[in-house]
Image (cartoon, rainbow, N blue to C red; front, side, top):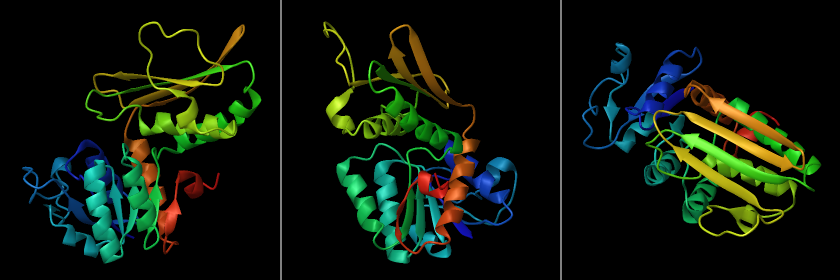
Length: 263
């Protein structure tokens, strides 16, 4: 399968480039970078000391060589890439987070023409945790307070993380509720007592943390914690490759990692 990588000169992009190069069944055919960045024009494998024959480019027409784009950039960049994918008939794996309602709608519309996997976290472990959270939430709906904590590196620009939101949504869905109606996004000052049936969120940003997430179910006399800690972006890269392989069998439609993993 012929693969293009967006943000190929970034941390996640480089991890994706390396993962594709090490894969026996995937071929790197295009690497996109931000216009004006010094890496544009360089070989995509320069950081590995390898000559891949694929130059980092800001020309979206390079996507015409690919069957699937993997994109972990920023919402505005991803949406521009997505338009090109629709025009060129290229499938898309989207791991970008921080989309507003309009952005999510644009992805939904694009899926009428091409096949897309869109997920806030491509990690197999995180998606197993999302399944566990639904089970726990149904068992612990009465008498337990739910809090979601997440921590990421200092350069992450959206909060709470897409994964934290997905965790909150897994709990809310198991309760038959809309997350927006029961989420407490911040606490400051005299907040009063905690409301029953609400889900609290707290966020930490610092250093080079890859990503820590914990959901607390706090009851009387006990506390259940479901935690996922990422020590490397490699787990996201490998999950993304699984998503790309899944799309090889799809012509159009919108899918997530639960579909990819058949859970």
